[in-house]
Length: 213
Image 1 (cartoon, one colour):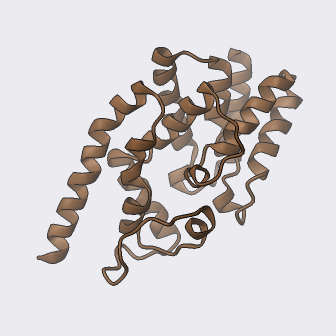
Image 2 (cartoon, one colour):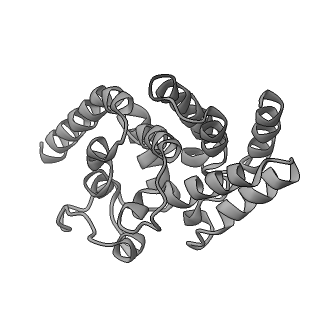
């Protein structure tokens, strides 16, 4: 497994060399570290978990005109070229296909402990101080406003609305980030999320205090 993981690390590092900083190789490394921590307590097939964590953003749909099949396909091609067993390839493909936040609106019915662990690890990286930094970096990348007080704070009700919804970065907290703690699967991730969620709330309290001064 170590040899394969070394190859996948080199592959992902090369593929994400010019990635947006919120979804770059450092994001991947943090997710891998989170996934290892969760798996130590929760179990699961560690090889599948780590492959899923390394490859989960190999071609994030938001950077590929919404195409959600490029990521799973690229991951499968890489794994197949390295002789990985078909059932493992299938599992990793479906982790990538089902990991994103918007897919909580729709599901193709695939669930597994390994998916839950990688999904939790990814969601943890969208919380806390790093989550705040990533949100504002991506907002700047998309040229979104910091905040639009003329737009009500609400959460889109379906996947299509979520994908098309143009919002400020502060709206993103209410659409997604503040909901993450209640969407985690594992008890380990829920404990890890407590302090990170509190930081999001503290940040917003301070933000609105300064905005209204």
